[in-house]
Amino acid sequence: MVASLIIALKGFWILFKFKKYGLILAHLAFIIGFPVLFFVYTTEFLWTMDEELRIWFFIPIGLVIPV
Image: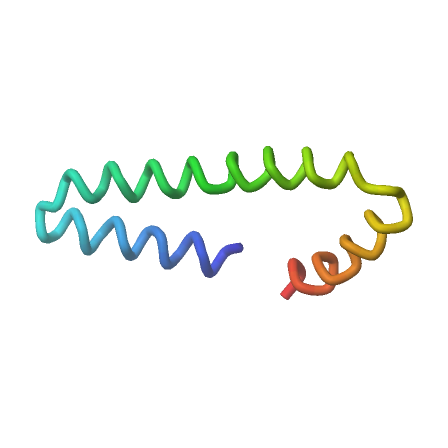
């Protein structure tokens, strides 16, 4: 997560350096919008699953997120 933030900030700096202000707005919209859409669709999908399937779905996520 920290690495993603650093990469995003470097992207902002490069876009600002080359005066690509429209792309900066698009970059912000993607960074803000993607997690919102991801969590909305994921939570709706997960709460319609059985409890056992939900646990098996979270095991790989729990292994990947700390990395």
